[in-house]
Length: 165
Image (cartoon, rainbow, N blue to C red; front, side):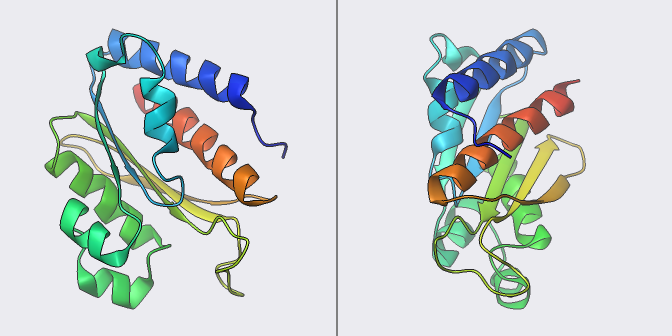
């Protein structure tokens, strides 16, 4: 898979923003491996305050616990890059914001940090509507750190569009 460029990410963010506005939804992001890139793409769009509530970058275990309410037991048992953690991240983002729709990402962008069961490029993305159930998906992206992060942003935005479907 070829990593999306800035133009591709901007187009995805604009389309997602239009759908959020039409659906009268407010978005919150909870980001780890993307470091706020999803929030940046969304807020690069003029008028995004009509559908973007806030973004939280929670890189460390401590930040995931303090900002998003991820339980220490979850991190100890499953690790930061897991379905369980991303579900707690996306749920916590809604609890700690005024948003109605959330996306969360946690993964291993590289170049180091991977393992046999969680190689570099492993990324969990979660989506959730307020009052609904979280949906989480594991992706295995290829390429360098920048490519993994770009693919993560694109997949997160495409998932939001499906949630708004």
